[in-house]
Length: 72
Picture 1 (tube, helix red, strand yellow):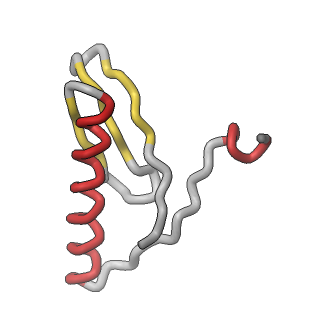
Picture 2 (cartoon, rainbow, N blue to C red):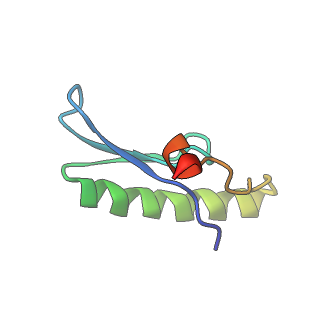
């Protein structure tokens, strides 16, 4: 399984946490806690990959790496 970077951040507007996977266009999820948002985005990732595979859509290689990982 490919390892994709996941962002998790608090949204004041939504009053909860958003998790997204930058390499997978539109793959994101919401949760009341960071843990729940992460759990939901992992489910969304599986659905995204299954759908892409089923429809022949290209599955991107993990590329997104925040600068902090590049300089550390």
